[in-house]
Image 1 (cartoon, rainbow, N blue to C red):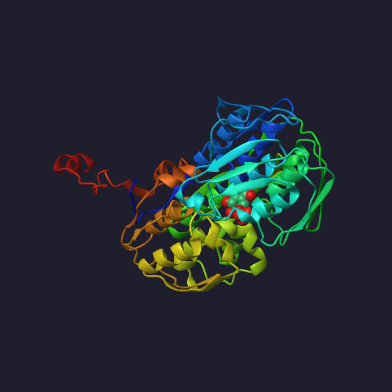
Image 2: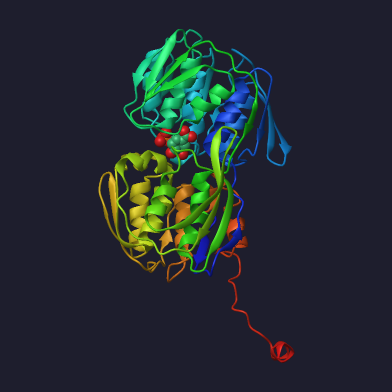
Length: 455
Ligand code: S3P
């Protein structure tokens, strides 16, 4: 456990490098791992979560190697080539690795045990194992809905026609990946549009996937051909320095190459609605994804009502968005947040508790959060239990940059799952973050000699 303390900071300025998109990185490693030939990935996120996926693919026969400078090479096992892993697949903290691999392995004659950390072990898996069981895979757990879980896939999986009961890209992707190796044609219907990287990246690997409205149709038995994947910077990671710069007076920050897929950009649209000064420069398409360079300037924010249909396009951003809302003038209303209760932590409960401890006036319901901002930063001064949740850890470190009293987080290590360079990068642009065992920044004391010299 590494305690970290965040204290009031001056303007954040310059440039911070945002690492590669986590969702795209997981998929690139998985799909490269089952493709024929070599896949080259540029700008892969080298974080704990993605390395869980990489290690799992290695244990099932793929060759995954880091060529340096963000370039990774994957030699896939080719059609039908995945082998049963010899030891349990350690999924760490990563829900995306777990759920997508459960789907992928369902179509192979393999046995695999999935294990994870304390946070992941509590997260619901029945949302994927129920439909995968219908298709013909089998799963054994110790009776609770979570990990550890042992599965037996089948090379004669049945096709499925399935309407998702939750808005979830992970469940959708698990079923698409199972359908890829099933007999016949499957149709998966989304409840609401969610991130579509599985669909678009499979197409880049030469797979025929049809998307019409909320329906995704895929025929089983198709082969993936290795290709090149360019990974943009992760908009969910960029969200933390973006909000930090909006809140810290005098800030002027640039973030390059940020992915702005229309199913991921909800936070940015909402911040602009609140009055944020964000310029989206050099909008372009890179590797099939919309990207832009963001220039963010400190801005006073006004409370808003987040349109409910926008929730899934900013599902991972609510912790940091709640920080922005806490410093805005007026009330911000967020509804339709039930899914936040089953993320790396119960994000709705953990944010509401931590913000209250920092002096924020709010109302928490089963699936909503209403924050009454005063237009000034809250008092702060709390010690936050981050519950193995990287986004909770980063959100409260950002709030500490503007709160009256420093904010401490009990454990910064989960940040390694998605944004390993967060603390060093933020310090470089002016954030006052300090590990518990590091000395406090002393106010600059000038000696008499120096003062005379300056005169
Ligand atoms: C993800 C989907 C989302 C998101 C997660 C990554 C993905 O989860 O919260 O961080 O890569 O498909 P759900 O599908 O559970 O909403």
